[in-house]
Length: 301
Length: 233
Image 1 (cartoon, each protein chain N blue to C red):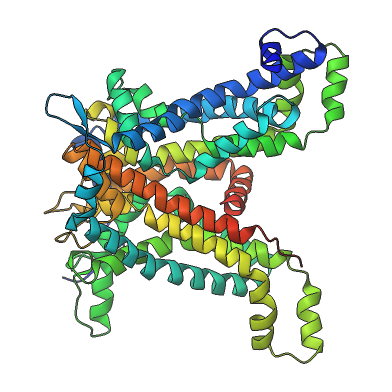
Image 2 (image 1 turned 60 degrees about the horizontal axis):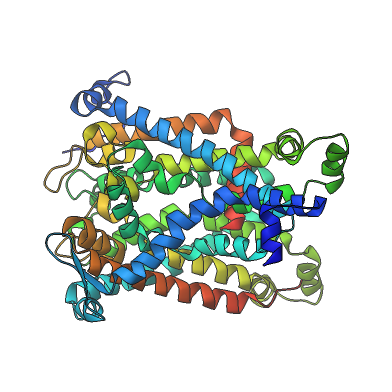
């Protein structure tokens, strides 16, 4: 191919420019190929091989998929992940929307105060945050049970309870993501021209009607985007679980990524871990494709 | 037992001293600072180069390569972690700085950010420099880099913070206490049966402190960083 040859041996000024451009992007392209593209293919291939004791591996077709997809521990982790999503995604989005709508009416000073608060979860590692939350949740020494006792309620087991562990982790996620999502909504709200709201007001629409029929429809794409971002964030939960419950008690908070980690690096079943890796990739790919489908139609104000 | 929120004495630093006595926490802080600095630096260089290439040149395959790189955003890191671990193992890099850094040297976000920023640099500036006799390398360093300094500062802060807070990958590759990062050090104070909250919270505060200092010193850039990541997702 002539044009490729001319990248190596440029003849004209334009050839040299093309080569320069190619060389500028080369380090990044090489790096991402080595760290993402090659390992991704290897994950796919690896999910068809079983590693034997001694290091050799053997092609086993879909056997490992069968093994993983009939394993109750796998479905338990998928189910827990779904429950976590159901608990934290709607809560985060609704809360962030409410806060953003409130802040939109406030002065700049209050908005920057919120921005400062938003930095806290943005800067603190999820590990440090989760450990502090574990303290808050502690059945004996925790602030939360102390607060319950002050209003005469019985203490709860929180992270150590089969029923409360997922809601407790969901609350940590809401805390971690609220500021971020609020910022997205706030930016979107401020991009909406005031005239729409004013026009509806002049036409006699109540505040509630304006919110429902003017503001929220205009925010629709942002709400969807935040939902998908939260879906991905919660789906990939690892740090918080590993630092606090390690999937316990009795597997009640074992989600998909911690299970993948245990499978690969605790039990060294690399083939099965690769199957889970492919599963995680497929799910997130599907989510992203749906997102593209929906976002193709731009919103015009 | 009555719960007390304020400390007995504000000058009581015993927990902090115990954190350093119990674990090699100073070493962890140094490790994390070193790793985060290197990853921020390498990220700046490679992203700025690629950003310039993607924004200001035409060459065969440019758009395909750019979309392939942006496409990585939908590949969860956990989907590539097993092969990556095997590679690091094969190359003898387990439990080394280079091994911990391997997946953190460049981020897709950086390439994307720098391409956006460099696209906004007027072509006339570049043309003027070329007429003055600059080659592309000189145009890059003397015109492009100064013009996108704010975006570079933003990227450096974000990348430093991301690497500082990284947990999953160090957990996979680090074995020895000497190579632990701060996040790994933190979970050293917990175990399933008993948690010394006084030490955990002291260590958590220590882990956040450097980031907090960066915030205070570079406040202006941090606000920009937060807004950018907030908008870009």
